[in-house]
Length: 113
Length: 115
Image (tube, rainbow over all chains, first blue to last red):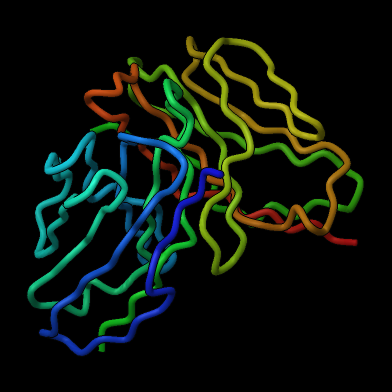
């Protein structure tokens, strides 16, 4: 079956601490993968996307980075979190081969204190 | 800058009535249009997509696209309390797998269906 996982589900981190969020997918090879952020009361903003292993495109300059070490794994990282990094982080994928529909994972809610 | 605009609401609808949501977009190169439903605290769920001008129906949902006027709408017939959620409109230009497709989202319309 085709599924997308994210962990952790929730995270509370102090300012200046590092971050690592993970997204994994099952059931499809070589999917396009995306990281979005939804700040409180705001719309979804595309942060990074990847069309293959080691291929990362950044949409918004910030203190976040992304990596794709394996075909079905997408990681969002930061060396030092800012208060403004708080939000709902969503991984998405083009689940259906040849289709441009994007499906979202369950998300990670990050609070930076 | 590519923009997608939605009325933030809340759109209050009596149970059983039709909810009508609108979305306008600025990029004339947009080719694919999506509606997502997002319950509070949850991730967005894809409910409809439309590529061609006209109407597309799926159960109680109908998406309407007018590229000339640059708007896309969503109708929810026989609205139920379980339809209470925020509805997000998203658009993207022509999609090439090797380049990915970057969705631009509107801010969402909050819908409240009252019993």
